[in-house]
Length: 118
Image (cartoon, rainbow, N blue to C red; front, side, top):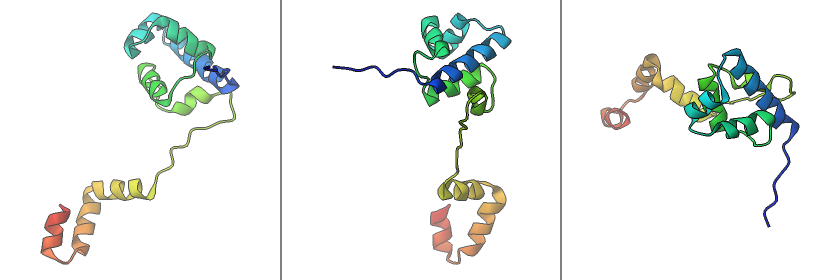
């Protein structure tokens, strides 16, 4: 037996903020649904907080509604989205910068190891 979970207050807040932003931009539920590849009925369910919005769907909605920070959709709630960087992502970000890669390569003494690194 499948049990449906009730929408939580945060789902309703996110849905209301999606609706408010959509209306600010004069975009219909149908237009937003087409952009996302879903029906306007699904948009209605998102906006009413009946169906939860996944993070990937919220990201697509933010693109369609020209919202740069996902925290926009949490206005009116105590929650904030924090995308903390792992040590690995910080290292990759550093190495992806031209100066970071040059610095790292200078520290590698053996030519063979440099070639394998690149």
